[in-house]
Amino acid sequence: MSFTDFFWTSHEGLPLHARDYAAAGEARKLPVICIHGLTRNARDFEDLAPRIAATGRRVLAVDVRGRGLSAHDLNPMNYHPGTYAADIVALLEAAGVDSAVFVGTSMGGLITMVLTSLKPEAVAAAVLNDVGPELSPVGLARIAGYTGMASRFETWAEAVAYAKAINEAAFPAYGPEDWDVFARRLFDEKDGAFVLAYDPDISAPIKAAAAAAAKTQAEGGQALAPPDMYPLFRALAKDRPLLLVRGGISDLIDPAIAERMRAAAPDMAYAEVPGVGHAPMLTEPEAWAAIQALLETAP
Image (cartoon, rainbow, N blue to C red; front, side, top):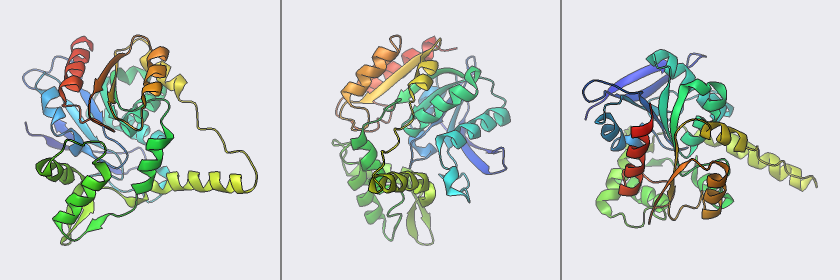
């Protein structure tokens, strides 16, 4: 199923982009907004979005600012979920959408939680893809280790090898054709080379936080605790359908975190994708069946 390019501007005028998949037949239910992870883009949903659109829902797959066809921010410290959530509010206004079902992978799930605090009526239901109000330091360290690092490769073979090296632990069953498809979601061709489709400066807030923590520790102080996201998570889980999809071998949402989330939100649906890490593509049988069930109950 094809899509059209949907462009809008942030409240401060930054040009932003989403892929717009029309609903098959008459759109009888609320649209779905898909939001990707930290270093990814709307292409991550190129298989999932048509499936959802075929159920009769419009789908907007977002390029978060600094990724894909969305503009880069001249102030890298704006790259954080609060800014991104405000961008989604601007998208809703531009697209004429009052309320939607949200599918958030990793960072996209954090954006959805923040959005719920900004505009709760906009979130009718949500899917959290391998993300939650707390995250394993193991997975966080892995992601921080490659974000904003190598970004340009002279040959396609090098680009594919990079994609595999960074993500092989999450998709151990992938073969050569899978990695070729995966890499095409990550890279753009530019000036005869292959570059990652995101602004390397998206890592600036992460690096700044790490530097501040190191400075505090060196000075004998106590590092600040990360913000408590559980109030946002509980608000998201209240009075709306919610699904957590977890990769069975995820290093970001470990089994203990998943159990704490399920205890905090007893009505939340849960699906686990065996043999996949962070983060499932959501077309796996276990994930897709759970998403279909949520969409059947969502407005």
